Image (cartoon, rainbow, N blue to C red; front, side, top):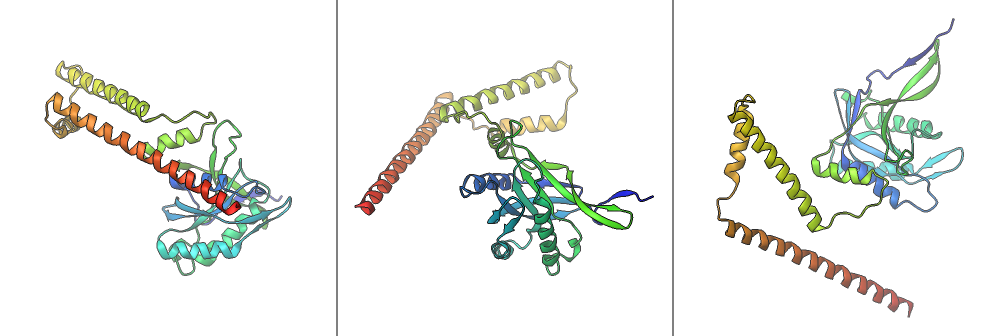
Amino acid sequence: MAVLQFFPPSSPVVSARLHPVVLFSICDCYVRRPDQADRVIGTLLGTVSGGVVEIKNSYAVPHNESADQVALDVEYHRNMYMSHLKVNPKEVLVGWYSTGFGVSGGSALIHDFYVKELKDSTKDIREAQNSVPPVHLTVDTVFSNGEASIKAYMSVNLSLGDRSLAAQFQEIPLDLRMIEAERVGFDILKKTAVDKLPNDLEGMEASMERLYALIDDAYKYVDDVVEGRVNPDNDIGRFLSDTLASVPKMSPIAFDKVFNDRVQDNLALVYLSSLIRAQLGIAEKLNTAAQVL
């Protein structure tokens, strides 16, 4: 009896890590896509170590898509890839991405193309990693489930006995590598609700509220240690001591003056930025009117 089996690649990818700059670049390319294009397709660059693909960079690849086929601009892809290698040789081809919810019908053809490109590029660039398969990343930019869905896939072979039938996409774990500031931007990006961003004063107020909450937590911890309710931690105590030592020793009046001066400087920068933006808008309209006349 023939048995239907899945055969993963010889050097399987365990998981993938995505840097936020790649995600924001994909979203930007989707916003700037041609009117007739339904989605964006592009190349993923990064590194591979211990079965983990770290996706660090990307670029969009022009394509024409019909109901039953997809035609990539291969020459553009190869020229862009060689240009990236000249700037950063350590970031190599690790896969490709497309916008949309999940894997589409033409994904297998595109994936086969990148498998061949990966084999050709690894002959001279990364001999030690030439068996690592490309990763397919999908980004749901239309918020099908109410928020942006980001998934990573690898291809596994489907065989019946000794005969290879087809390849199937299998989802792999995906880790978003973000610092706190990038996480805030991503949380705003992935929501469908269109809320205005906080202005400077609102942002400062929110920051001060978080600071008060952290100070209150530190005060409660120190009080619990002094009263014997919590065992002391030398690392936390050293961190609190270094934090207190870093605070400038100045009178409340001097601190208020420095703080107010900083606020005034920020407001002046905001005003100058708005003024420059208005001047550029007027200059653009005058230039357009002059060309029409």
